Length: 249
Image (cartoon, rainbow, N blue to C red):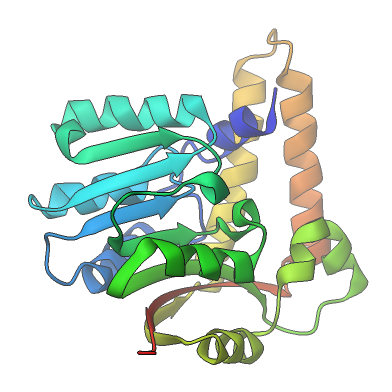
């Protein structure tokens, strides 16, 4: 089982691949889509949950999604066809960092996908290249809720190197010219629900498919992840989703 397949199974029963509740996702999209006829791009779209929601709510909106996982894009395409949204959705099988478009976008979504772009600063640079003047970035990013112990850093691995506390993260964004116009810090309930769903979905799949060659690996991965979360980063890790606009000039 490769990482992409494992991620699809782990996120099978969660609204999006981020620690956000269903009503939080809806509220963030209401703030992000200002006119209703925007061109929207999501880097790291997975199975397209964000884009499908936006398209369903706004009949004049068009969207593109980029992801390196062909199976996730197939799921997004099938769902779009079932919902009658396929005509307004473009899906691109490539690494988010490699995507370029002929026309800029009004809204760019990058939620939990900064590692796929090389980190936070490269993700901001990619957003600046893709957005039209006056465009909006919906950025979901981890941060340290408190100074992390070594166990938290070890549990998160390379991801820990790109985390800051929330004031430092906000200062970095504003210094780079990105101004927050709305934000949501994930609650403890949202963070815990995400982790229980991630580990529980993978564990349930392993229990339901005991004869599958990857069952033992899936169960082991879920156990290791749950241990890293509960014994490592649970008390230190937070997640913030910010709606950002560029400062003129």
